Amino acid sequence: MRQPRRRRAAALVVALVLVLIVLAISAASVAWISTARRSTAAFDEKAGFKPGMEINEAVLAETDADALYEAMLRNQLMRPVHQVTMEHYSNPQWFEDSERLGHTVRQTRVDYEHYRVTEADADYEVVDGTQVLHAQSRCVDGGSHRWSEYTGTWSKRPQDSCTPELIKVGSGDGIAPGGLSAQQADRYLRYLRGEFGDPVSVGRPTLFEHDGESYVRLPVKVTPLRTGDAGYTGMMLFQWALIAAGIEPLTYPYSNGGAGASGVEVTYYIDPDTTLPAYSFQRMTPVLNSAGEMKDPGEWLSVRRAEYAFPERWLPYDPADPRDLEPIALTWHRDIR
Image 1: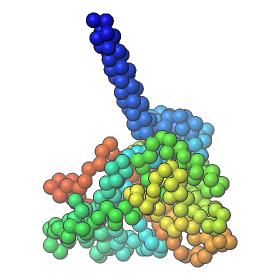
Image 2 (image 1 turned 90 degrees about the horizontal axis):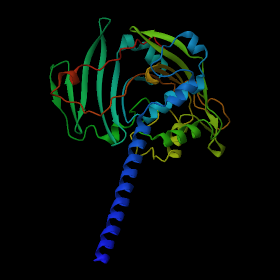
Image 3 (image 1 turned 180 degrees about the vertical axis):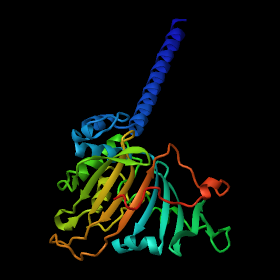
Image 4 (image 1 turned 90 degrees about the vertical axis):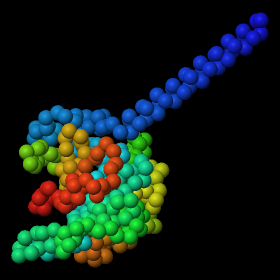
């Protein structure tokens, strides 16, 4: 009788050990997910304030601008779902002329964890000095639903008219994707700000009021750096930082918003409660040749305006939901730069 009892006791011990291992793995998984999605309070504290505290000029005068930029970028990188509403102009003159010529607004919703992306567009034209909606579209299940001012109705286009492979080009804000773990975000930042020197210079944060809410205005400039035999590299550094974080940019729902050898000047308007961008104004800087000289002062100088939302879960557009069919538009004024 002793032998079966010993066997049962040994089996119970093995079972208990297995249960403890499973619980440990589950706890580690929950901790990793929590770390990957939480606000990075340690970075926020280094920046000089915690999310939710009252922000004023006195606080901002003591704020570490570089730490604030890294806190914002890190939080943005770690959010699994991004919604970005953007106006894009291929050159500065088109931006200046858009109020009298019309413009296009594009909204992308990206689920970086599950590689899902969808988009909506609205085309505006000017009639008798007034901006009016000309056409709009929604991507639903790989097919495009388009609305025309001439018919006042929606029509469905071929099933392959808005594939994820096409939508991902130009998705997001053209600078930072999401979906990274805390460890990946750390590797990304170390590469971006240290592999070839630091291409990022951050200006002084100031308080900005918009629609009754307070934001932190933060000017940032990315200057192309010499990267060995590759010559000068600017926007491409964001893709290389993704590779350093263990992500393949060519298959990820991400593409940067300018030529690889150009830089960018961005003014961010940061929500102090989340340390995430609410709005940004971007101007690309000229492409540099291998000698660090401007190839063409007017080349690739696109202008972008972007509004951000970071919902908890990804939702496709629903043609049956009137809210999803409302015209896409930015709420921040174009003069906020």
